[in-house]
Image (cartoon, helix red, strand yellow):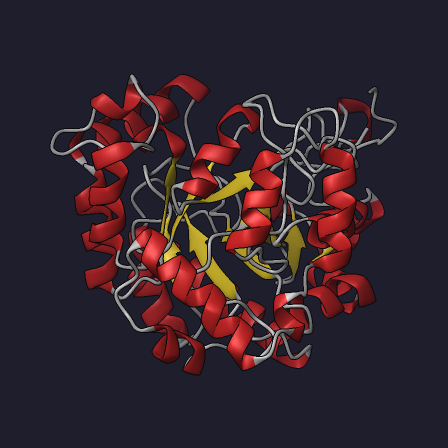
Length: 385
């Protein structure tokens, strides 16, 4: 079947609206403009054709919010004012993964290569501004996380006073250098940071999860880090789950060929595919894109697993009609689901304790999710044509 779906550019309102409805949540990128506002944009330079580049330097942080929105980029406030996104995030328990982007050292707020204090202040300032907007729009704390490629993340969190969950992205990719030099620096940290240490370091620092590269789980690259290797099968994943004890691991990119294995292993994936017509995975499994917010019990999982490529669309329609969203589940149903999950993935707390600290609309923090990366997925450059 040829899909008729057209993917919207990353970090745009259309992209985010679509992804937050078809997945368990969305991930998106924030930068600070020259006039102190938050805008959704991934790259250090404004991602438009050369003919549309505004005056002066092309660094994103060197331009006002009006400059950037006039080109078509989305302000954080406008995103939060959208009724679809606000409702899904607030009432339907969808996750919001907020990635703060450090500017290039030569851009406004950049602070130079060695300006660590300026880097900490800049990221802290972004968190304060994000907190104010999220609080204004009543976005829950329990299904929001702040993270960044930023070695001073804990210092920025402490300075900002934010109470929202946070984490460090690993391996660290600096905001400057060529593609290859960035990857080289990331590879060195990857080599010296085994998965168990990554989890423990985040937990000891007070982080709420361990977001990391998917290579920690996929051979042959999973053999590179010194120490115990990660994996998605057998004893390797049982050891990882035991070490987690429910501490979430989010990985990127969750390619379609690995998606089923990752979710079955208790790992949340950030996907670049939000195509609603793609319902059969290359691994030979039916795709279920909302494992946390539209949770399947053991019997429903069995029905999904037995579906064939020929009948899986009928099975999907049946289950979609039958499954009760997490936000509408009663306590008994939630206890049943959490007990199944904690047994499967070795969560350390009791089901009752997990339920008690969960928000009424949001699945437990430990839940395994499928998240839309940059909304409906990464797109080609320039982002806006």
